[in-house]
Image (cartoon, rainbow, N blue to C red; front, side, top):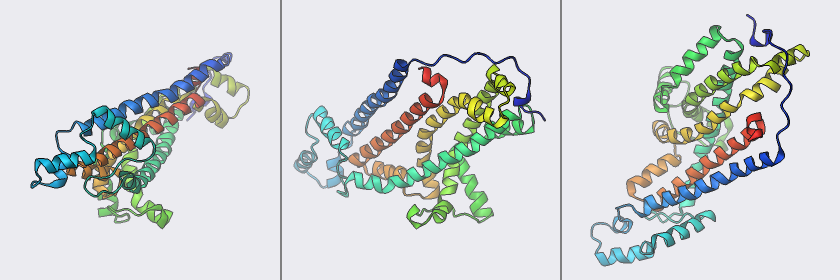
Length: 337
């Protein structure tokens, strides 16, 4: 079967002029300024959800036998009797220095609790992203090069099916297959990377795979569509006519122009990974930030809830900023913005 690179095309078109440097600089400044504004708004919303909650943390800490005087004294110790804006600015200023306060119930610093659980989520997220890129990228490229063939149809069907399944359903299915039937991987639990790469991978591969398949399916669909369009462009034919090898034409020219939508999907997939971690951590019994947040919500531990939400928002914004910078660097469209 001939590939799309072998198809005759029209003569190569002239290369586009180089983008102006000031416009590129404005695009980079915008990519950095937007997350700052979103962070400030998100921090205000996060603090407001806790500060304006109808539950009284002081009453919850002291118990049912507390008197109104005891509750008022505890509210003063927590600083809850101050104006809302003063509380927010004080909390934000401390958060920017790494101080997220202390838990109302355990008095443990919130930052210590979060950063004890955060490596679990970050390790799983990195592994999930790597699996999504590897599986989705390979499937998308293969389907584009064999457009209309069996591989293309198979990738389309599988990607469409995986796109309809939420991570917790995939997670349960993986546990049934690999833990119950085949008995080759543990159904739950976690060991850190300090115990070795292979022991960590045995416990991390199933939850990471459950989080990655939906993103991999989206990457495969987007990459297949955009790569097919790029392989039909005149500059690809011109490169082939000039004697460039098929591999170089694919990876140095066509793929670079086609990768933009796939990178965007990857950036959108980071919040999906973090959001899906709530249920996935429950299925696989993982000691991550999602479980910490659920425990804090059950106890109405406001500082811990605010801290976990702020850290999660920060991680998502950092990932989206990296994606935007990558788009500015990799794609012609981004370099012209």
